[in-house]
Image (tube, rainbow, N blue to C red):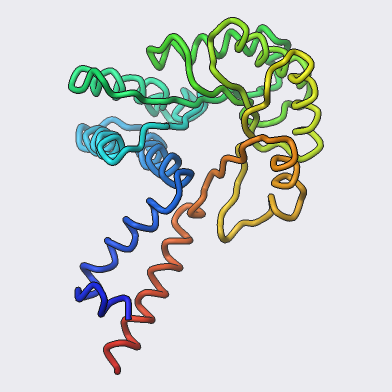
Amino acid sequence: MLVKFYGLPFYVFAPQVLYMFVFVTKCCLNFFSMKYVKRFLCFAMTTDRKMKAAKAAFDTSVDCGITFFDTAEVYGSRFSFGAINSETLLGRFIKERKVKDPEVEVAVATKYAALPWRLGRQSVLTALKDSLNRLGLSSVELYQLHWPGIWGNEGYIDGLGDAVEQGLVKAVGVSNYSASRLRDAYEKLKKRGIPLASNQVNYSLIYRAPEENGVKAACDELGVTLIAYSPIAQGEVLIAVSCSIIFVWVLYIQL
C-alpha cells in the first residue's frame, strides 16, 4: 500500500524512504551527517573526488537544517593510515560555509581520548585547546570524554569542569559510560555547580542495551541527555527497512 500511495516504482521509491527514515529523529540527523563525512576519512582522504563528496555531504546537511556535528580528536588521526583529521576537515568546511553564508550557525561536539598516558585535569584542557585549533573555533558547544580511562577518571572530570569555567565549552558530557560511572561523574560535576549534559552510547532499534543495563534509566533520572551513536546500526536498520519495503512491494504487485 505504501508503494501505491506514492505511485512510484521501487527503484525510485526506496531512496525516498531512506531519506525520510534518516530524518526521523534529530539524533539520526546529527550522527548521519558526520558519519558520512567520517566514512571518507577512514580511508586516507587523498583524492579530490572524495574530498568533494565529503564537502557536499556537509553542505547538504546544513541546507537541510542539520547544524549539529559530532566529531572527535581520534577520528582520522595520525594513527588512521594518514587520513585527514576529522576536526581539521570539519573546521575547514565550517569556515568555507561561513564565507558563503555568514549567518549560518553550526554547533560542534568533540571528544577527549582518555589514552593511558594522559593524566590529570590539565591533559583535558591541553587536548581541548588542540581540538579547538584544528576546528578553528574559540569554543565548542559540547565536549565529552570519549570513553572511561583505565585510571585518572576523576582528573578527567575535573578537567571538564575547568573547561566550562574557562569558557572553552558550553557543556560537557561523557561517552560509553556505564550507569555507575555516569552517576559518579554527575555527582562530581554537581559539586561545582556544573551539569553533566550527555552520555553518548551505542543505541539503535537493533542494539537496545542502554535500556537493559540501566544507562538509559540513569540518564532519565539525572536529566542527562542520552545521545545515540550508530542510531541506524551503521546501515543495518536501513537494510531491514529496505527489505521490508521490497517485501511489501512484491506483495502489492502480486495483488
